[in-house]
Figure 1 (tube, rainbow, N blue to C red):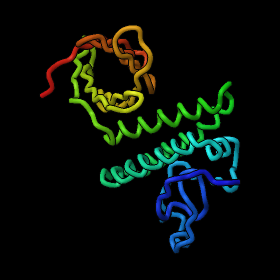
Figure 2: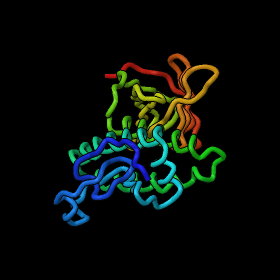
Figure 3: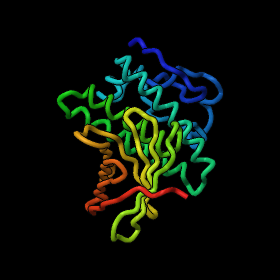
Figure 4: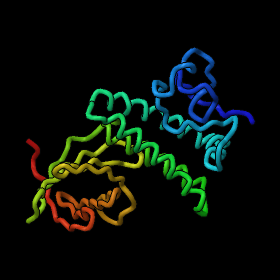
Length: 215
């Protein structure tokens, strides 16, 4: 099989895959625990499943895999600086995401599903780890509820993404289609902005909120 063009990251793997090129340096001799973590580690010379085959054989999906690799590497670097096992949590989160890709093969259009899933994951990493330009955060005060303040940071990603912080909870939501206002959804949260107000469904809890000046 001819490998599609890829943006290689040095030392990423000793076999060719969707997000890198073949390496035969001494990096390959290092113990597995010391090897750099990669976003997908798909091997295009011997695809392990239908997802790997589709990503490896399609230029558009390969480019998305490469973009994901770039932002995942940046997120890992920030996680290393954060400490508190942030790197381990990010790696486990990414492994769960890779496993979830197989669900796309059950869809009517697996190719479109994979593309959308990659795009959402890229924008999620950009927002969660501040890897994209952002607007000034807005503070929303919600009526009559404990932990009633939501800090919203909006990122210039595609699709548009917001990071919502409420108490000790943090969620990443993506902008979807809406007849009026800006509607963001994700991780069990819906955040619908209309002017200075926002209607929020926070994992089953309904909130009516209004923007407040940030300190």
